[in-house]
Each structure stands twice: as C-alpha cells, then as structure tokens.
Length: 68
Image (cartoon, rainbow, N blue to C red; front, top):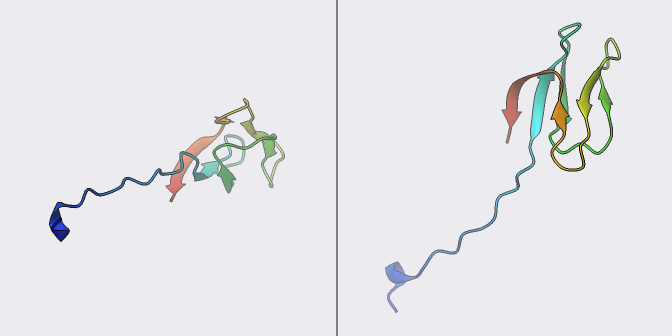
C-alpha cells in the first residue's frame, strides 16, 4: 500500500472539560470540573456552584470559558 492511502485511525476525545464559572451571587470566577462528583462551593461567598448528577454535573453559575 502506498503511504497516502492508509486509513487514519480516529482517537476518542474526552467529553469532560475544565470550566471557568462565575458565581451568581458575588461574581467570583473559579475553575471547576464538568463531571464533578461532589458539590462545589464558591471560595469567596460559599454558595453552591455545581450539583453532581451522577454523570455530567449541573452547573448553577454562568460558564465564562471552556478550558481545553
């Protein structure tokens, strides 16, 4: 087989990401994991930012940026 005719193998990409989330109460920005397994609280005011659901976590704040 010629080099250019080889089939390229697709590699699976992770579905989880790190996110920058803004707290709805105080506006503090914090980096969290999209598939968090326990509740994450704001480091500034203590309000809950993430609620675990068994898979992808429910984000209660505003997602500012997705880090990849």
